[in-house]
Each structure stands twice: as structure tokens, then as C-alpha cells.
Amino acid sequence: MLSFIYNLASSFESSHGLRPNLLYLNQSHLRYLAEGFGNDYDLFQIKNMLQMEIIIDNEAVHPHVAWTRIADRKAANF
Image 1 (cartoon, rainbow, N blue to C red):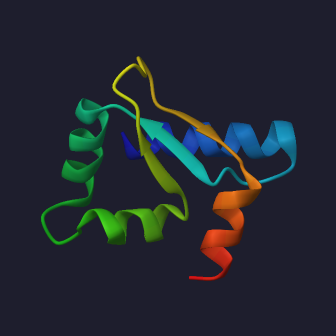
Image 2: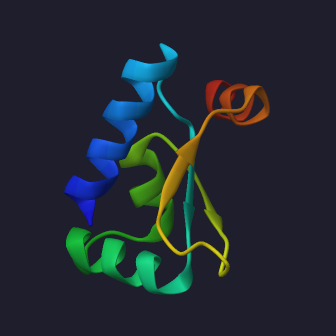
């Protein structure tokens, strides 16, 4: 899952000239992602490692990324 998200983020950055700061996942994707990090990481740490806010969208068939100024400001003030 981690390599898939990395490829999504890289492709987005190549296409748009900015790194995505939102990651849309459903509950199953989130479980797979958390398993990839192991038990030593909680959701807060995973978000920090990815440098993206995580949006849980149970309608999402596949993970996808996006960029928004609001999330960018929130991350900068963190």
C-alpha cells in the first residue's frame, strides 16, 4: 500500500507541480496502510510521515490524493 501511495503522490506532483496534501482512503485501505507501518506507528505518526491529511471516504474504491490550500495552511501551522 505504501508504494502505491508513493506512486500516486509522485504522479500527482509530476502532473500538477505540487505535492499532494490530502490522501483519501476507505477503512480497508487505512488498515493496510497501518499494517505497512507496523504497530509502532499510530495514525498521527503515519500522517506526519506521509505529510498528508488522511480523509476516510468509505465510497473510495481506490486510494487517491489531492491538494488543498486549507490542509497546506494547517500543516504549516502545526
